[in-house]
Image (cartoon, rainbow, N blue to C red):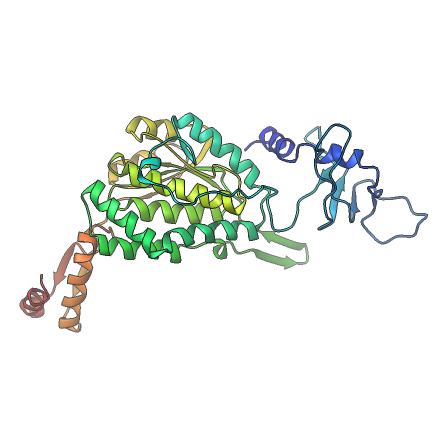
Length: 383
């Protein structure tokens, strides 16, 4: 986001807070943020107003008062030639978004309809995600954790994990239901969240420096037919934990189950009070929609999971990109190994989800001394 966009975002999200504070007849006057005597002039740059956090007007000439939660920073500075918002008022631990009530479950018929993060066009989806991410900038780390924990809760549920795993196999014709249940629950429970966002502090003669991670903004994510649910779950948790919004372009063969996942995430986030449309997609995924997403200026970063072709494409866009393409990892076995155990481990990994994971062994290299024995052991294990 450039300076103009950041300023516009602040103005839109915080809207009438500054005006409301000026209209509140009972609000205390700003006092110096440092302890000072009553006769000292207040600081012209930064002040603190305590116990006064007025909410936007509910009607003409009236102001709804809010219970005081934390101090407010009052600034008279100008930023880039534009007056900065006078009052920044945010309740600790929330994003000032009202939680909604409603059914969290999504039927198979509802999954492919527009709404709950599903849009008819890619332009609409990205515009909604951009607006959501601007609002998300004002959410606390505690709120991010609340939202990502909500996503984990959805897909760690045994019934839901079984449902999306079965639908994935039915729609894509790939994989094993029992193994996909394991993968989906693993993605929900073990994908890194805000705990990875560590702050570094450097001190010395020149002072103190804090280094913190900041979000990219709107991230475009391309998901594969081999692991559609695991990718959406993992990407959603990681991207939201880092303060981003996610726009998904699923593989067409996994359309229905991918849209189901996006709708489930949106309904859960709405109940938790998150900004609407932090995770979005299109109703009819296609190569054209994927190309439009990659070229869209508001998409600041691309994440692609798929074959070497799509990975090469995102790496050539000129944008920040992360690609996970096809892998053909070998396993090397020599005479020092526990041959019987190595054989069992190789067969177990190769057979997991019909060898769809890129990290599963695809070839075996063995020294001549133990090659025949290894083959015999692998055959005994079902290989």
